[in-house]
Image (cartoon, rainbow, N blue to C red; front, side, top):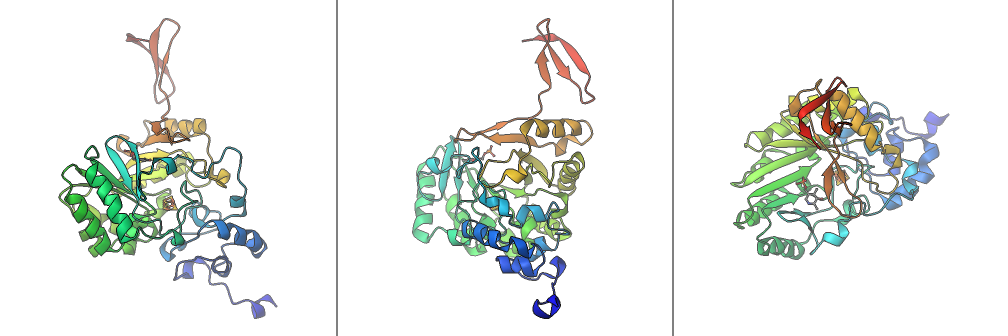
Amino acid sequence: MTSAVNPPRSGPRAITRTLRSVTDLLDAGLVPPTQAPELEQVARQYATAIPPAFASLIETPDDPIGRQVIPHPSECHTEAAEDPDPIGDDALSPVPGIVHRYADRALLKPLLVCPLYCRFCFRREHVGPGGGVLDDAALARALDWLRTHTDIHEVVMTGGDPLMLSPRRMRAIMTALEGMAHIHTIRIHSRVPVADPERLDAEMAEALDTTRSMWLVVHVNHARELTPQARAAIRRVQARAIPVLGQSVLLRGVNDTPEAMEDLLRAQVAARIRPYYLHQLDPAPGTARFHVPIREGQRLLAGLRGRVTGIAWPTYVLDIPGGHGKVPIAPDYLHTGPDGHLRVRAPDGTIHRLARERG
Ligand SMILES: *Cc1c(COP(=O)(O)O)cnc(C)c1O
Ligand code: SF4
C-alpha cells in the first residue's frame, strides 16, 4: 500500500545531489517519518547539507558518518552548560570577517557557507547558506584591518569554509595577502577535501599557490572520510608543496573508541596528513549527544601512546569557554612523589622515579 503512495526510496548510495531539506532526508531514507515535525523545527534554526560524496559513505543513519551530518530532534534541546558562542569569538571581532584573539595571528572568515553542516559545530548559530559571503566592501575592510595590523604574521582562513569560495575570489584574497609584507603564513581550515573533494580541483589548487608559507588544515573525524577521491584532492594541494595537517573533534559515536581513533590517526598519516589538533567538543547548543568527557578523552589517547607512531599523535586541545583561548589537555604523565621527586608514567602504565627531577 505504501509503495503506491510513496516513491521508492533510492537509499543513500544512489544520492546524486546535496541533501538539504527534511523531505530530501525522508526520500533518502536517512530519517524516520515520525521525526519529521521535530526535524522541521531543527531546520528553522540550523542548516543541513549532505553532499553526495559524503552521503554515499553513510551505511546506517547512526553510523560514524551519518551521526555527523544528519539532523536529530535533540538539537532543539539546549542544556544549561551550552552556549550559542561557546568560545567567545563574537566579542573578539574588530570588523566583520576578522576574529583576533592571539598576538601574532587572526582569523579571516570570508564566508559562512560550508560544504556540509556538522551537527556538533561550535559556530552552528552562525554558519549556513543564508550566512553568505562577505561582500566586496566588507572583504576590503577585513583586508584593510589585516594590512594595518603589522603584528599579525599569520592569517587563518576559516568560516564557514574558505574552499567554498570561487577560485577567482580565493586568488584575489591570496594576492591581497601577498601584498602585506608582515603576513608570513596563510593557513586554510577546510572540510571540503573530505566533504566535497571535486571542489578542490586543479583550478582551486592553483589559486592556493603562493610565495607565502601556506598550510592546509583538513577537518576529518573518521577514517572512512579519507576516500580515494578525498586523497586525490589532498594530493593536488600537496603537489604544490603545501603541507596538509589534520584536525578532528572527539565525538561520541564517531571516533570515541580506541579502534576508531587509531584508524583515524593512521588514515591521516597514510594520506600524508599530520594530525595537528584533536578538539574537545565545544558546548554549542543541542550537541550533548556528541559529548565525550575530557578524562575519557585523555584515557583514549593514553591507550594509543606507544602503540601508534608518534607522527600520528595530535595535540588534544580545549577552547576554554568564554573566549580564554585554546590549551593542551593531553594525558598527564608526570606527578610528584612523596619524596619530592617527579614520577613518570610509562606507556605500559608502570611508574618510574626520576632521580634528577624535583618539584
Ligand atoms: C583556534 C584559533 C586560532 C588558531 O590557533 P592555533 O593554536 O594557532 O591553531 C587563531 N585565532 C583564533 C581566534 C582561534 O580560535
Ligand atoms: S565545516 Fe566547520 S564551520 Fe562548517 S559546519 Fe562543520 S565544523 Fe562548522
